[in-house]
Length: 230
Figure 1 (cartoon, one colour):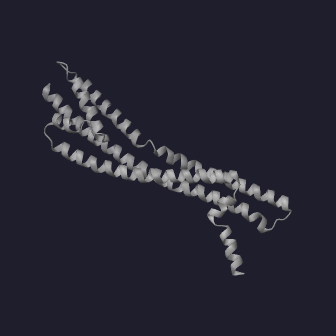
Figure 2 (cartoon, one colour):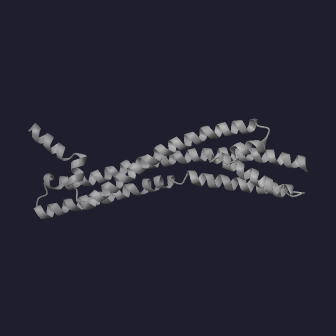
Figure 3 (cartoon, one colour):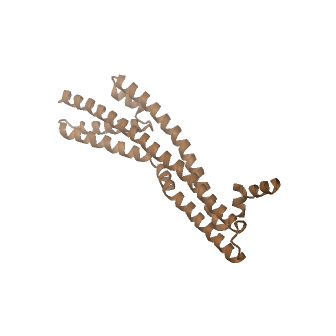
């Protein structure tokens, strides 16, 4: 009796369930498994990326507010790929263009500075959030894809009942097990995706606010310089 229970349990292992499934359920499971792998790849890479960006941005700001030579600082860091450095470069580039004339329009210069840095913040935020769309899509779609596998497995179970003219558990159990396995894989892909998307969106909002605060401070610095020149 114990051997029978073990053999029955082994037949319902995840690998065996996949091997016994038909092509449709196999396609659903493979698709969800690939989506889950890509979700975890995005999660790991984004955690490392946003951590590095935050550390580098903190060092960038600390060094920037200590410097007395903005142009010299730009020569050192103006070509950096760091998002906050791109905001700095956009603001300084607009400052140079606006003050290249003999009598610059101070109010117009302030407005153009704000617009240039705001546009840079939006562009950099969009770049950082690029791959997060996949997390949102997976979190929304994966449960329904798994549900499709569930429905298909239940349909096979009813077909088995009709073919065997037997409604015993031994007949319907394989199809139901495949159905529930597809649902489990869908949830396994969707739950981390939803959690990661919400968490990373919060982290991106924090970093966007950080760039905004830097842009405001840099805008104030250039505005005071504009008044002194005027």
